[in-house]
Length: 428
Image (cartoon, rainbow, N blue to C red; front, side):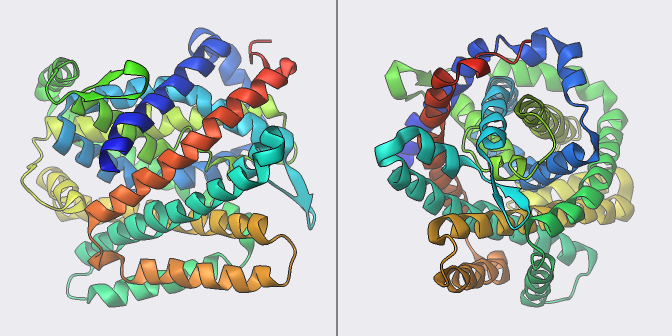
């Protein structure tokens, strides 16, 4: 199974990214001014972007980068960025279709990958959408609950040493429950206030680390580019494509960070009511650029220039030790706070995604509430015991669930755009 994930999923994601990059004529790269103008859309568009970013800007920007560099070397950062530039167009397609096919319920919009998957595959649409939704739920439990909560607990433990991990994780679970009571609208309000501030703090601290080791920047860049094209550890992928361990780690950890192609953030983009599908698509591209091209690259440069000790077993502790060397306990506290807020925002965002998945599976039946209660119990259990769950197992289920989601989502997007002639290209 691991070989299947490593060989097939990166190829599918890249093929999808290349297809939509050419279909959209590399819109955001070749028409930057028009792209930036398309991002303007008022506070609600900004809120939907923050909600989507809450699901992607998280500890994946740290754990994903560190894990990729451990396994694939510094060159994996290069492939992270390459895949992001291509797969950003997948995010455009997801956000566009989510906005185009969204539905109304109780005075608000909702939708996502399961809606356009069911619509485009017709006879088998419902079955494929159900499979997609089930793995979406698995992704929310692994990528969302286990991974994010484990990082938050370790971050709080660094700020408040001496408190048992089970106490911290239990309090975090309680906070998540209280925050999800109001549904996606309430979650959007929380993320709209927290995500921009903590992103700015994280970037300031990271650039401080990089600038304080400015003499190492040329060496770091040389290492990233030279390591990116080493041929050790070749893995043969789909259609004869050839992947090195470096490429595979960069692509898969990039997906873990920005989730482009798997269709998860389509739920967030479907909540926007007063904007065009084209603008939502552009927000999706901005989401990938902010998450991977900016945040992951800055994290990687901080790690490499600062000389992070890769022998430290825990990815979060490794990062905290690096920032401590530059700014002492103050930086540890601030980075820990960033990790906590990012992780918390992602936790409540994925809990909202889980609610949408359950709503799709059970509709308006009375059993829906019972089903969501069961889901929420599993979600809370994963949060509470997250510090004690093996991280490699979590990453395996995260890769597996997002890979299968992409396996269903990308063909659905291709068919949707082939049948929608008006959506041939965002270049107007």
